[in-house]
Length: 498
Image (cartoon, rainbow, N blue to C red; front, top):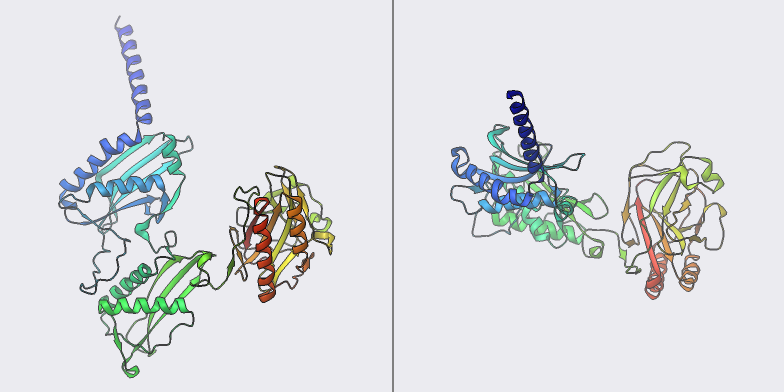
């Protein structure tokens, strides 16, 4: 009898344990945040003496490090926790990255960036699809996790939460970092950010006072000159840097420069350099990232000029990709088996036997044309091994991959990325595919593309540049606008192709 009772008790415990485990996995994340996590964090930060009035920052973590970009889900959890503590007495939340413009009536505040504790949210998905949410506190000064401050959840997401998990977003509190750059409408905020960084660096140094003159040579680029003027004005308001009208009084120069990192990403540097090489004053600099889209090319820092080219609102052409052909003879023969290739994910290497092709796919029967804007050598049309004087067109059947073999011995290196705009003077080699799903549109495009110089070998061919390219592209834009219901295009930009 005792044995039976024991067995029944064991079975009950097993089922109870299984049910508890299932309940923990299936607990609703939203309910856990509102009923469990938020009250816990509020209690910890308001009752634990070590947190009282200490500067605290809420961040998203990955591998125990704060991230400047994360999933929308992780950022939303972070924001909810931060907002719940915003009005709690004794809790000092640092709102880093929320740049404000300079108030001339107030001195620079270099303490606003000081943080003693991170409250970190980490969201990780395991191989089985289960989600782990961990919230912990990091003592920055001691570089240790705060003992006893930990809350975790493990379970499955609903559809809306799963979508948020897959949406990558920049963390605006890290604005100015590479993964969270300023945008082209925030030049004033960028200037304020740079001035704040420079101003605090100037106030921390003890070697002496930096004096610059208004007659300092300005950058030749108008946008760079305007940015430097904004930064200088902010520094003057901060009273962190002295400006003198007399050139003889100056002991330093202030300079600004935008460095292009990628197609639309720039890193803007402002540097204060002592005039004398043996000066006790140190070089002081600050930098931040800014993203500038093509439509602002003429008026902002981007040196290249974009041309808007219309295309179908319902795109039927898949993004262009580069594939490596495993049979090196394919480039010489001009004929390949699509199955004997592999798609690159933005990185690729080269050897003496490399053979490459462009590949795409159309959801409609289409006529395809391939172009190449060679860096510093202009725009050409590609005709493959045939080297036809007529425009080389390829027929793409509905939902069937189509490949265009590149000239033999093409050298691939560094990286490629999908682009979304045509430029007169791109900073990278660029490949285009133009598709027409209408016969008349295809004929019009063929006649116009025929005006481009033809390239059919590994040798770089001089293409259209300057005024001739602008005129050709304006005419192309008119054709594309007229037939935009039946025209689509894709492009990729490639570093160091040849």
